[in-house]
Image (cartoon, rainbow, N blue to C red; front, side, top):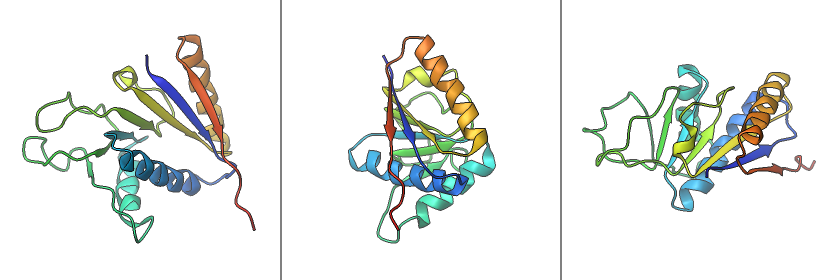
Length: 154
């Protein structure tokens, strides 16, 4: 059964949420997992793509924006980004083991992943959407864990 992890940030900005998404992506990648980042829309997917190139000057996370290349032409990458359902696994692009869901809703296909991460910050729209996601996961019997992250120290 898919394990669900909610990361609760004290920040209110959407930029802080995307920054944490990049840091979490790097951590998951360094642990050797294949990851899919599910964005709200094309604009967010492109912002994530750009952020993964620039969030830390000493970091490199190999990733691809779905739709940039056809899977047959692309080398398999450990991190994919998209706002639509990822393609079915193939020899060219094996299945991701984890998904980072930055969409307001839970995608129907989330259970194909071993783990799903959700990021909550104190932005009102995010709080409302992710509280509903939490309740849906729990009502369906999925194991859900919250990770409350400390605020920045001055």
